[in-house]
Length: 230
Image (cartoon, rainbow, N blue to C red; front, side):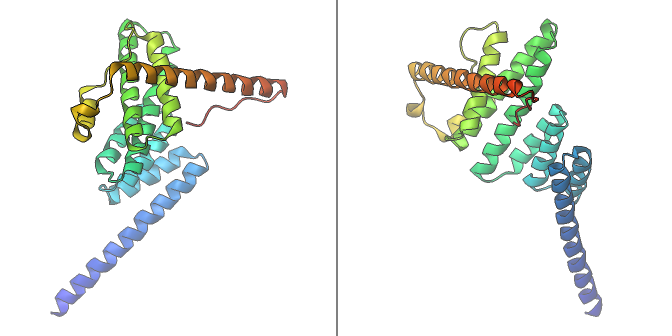
């Protein structure tokens, strides 16, 4: 009986110490992230993940740190894991949004480098995936204005580089997600889709003008314009 009690107490204190250690690692990683020390943040989040691989928070934080390091492929892998473990609509929306950002930023930067035909086709496909992720984010949080703006940016870039002339169709995976929560009677008509795309394009054009005006004002003040924090 005494041996059993000692075993139970040992297990209890080990679990308690492990929980404290995981929390401390998360706090260390978060502080490093805020201080823009993303290398150390990644290290801390990885160690926290090793202690608890079954929480979306660890994968989500790690994905965000990789994103800041411009390691977009690694960010996407962790966002996928985070999405599988997430449970609330707000969490799912945040993950889908950031995942879309990773694909959009990576594709935009590489398209500016004049890729060959095969590379360009792959990047255009990634833009289609980014569009899918923004759509999913908006299904979880329909009023997310930034998701709408970035969706329009992704579509505008897709339209510029894609040989197709109509909006990209949703991937089968995205369609399956939609069909799970919507009946055929709730599917929007083509005319409504066209109107939605036009509204989105108007929004992004307005946003482009605002950003250009900000850059012009900044240049007049001889200050360096900062990159948009996605």
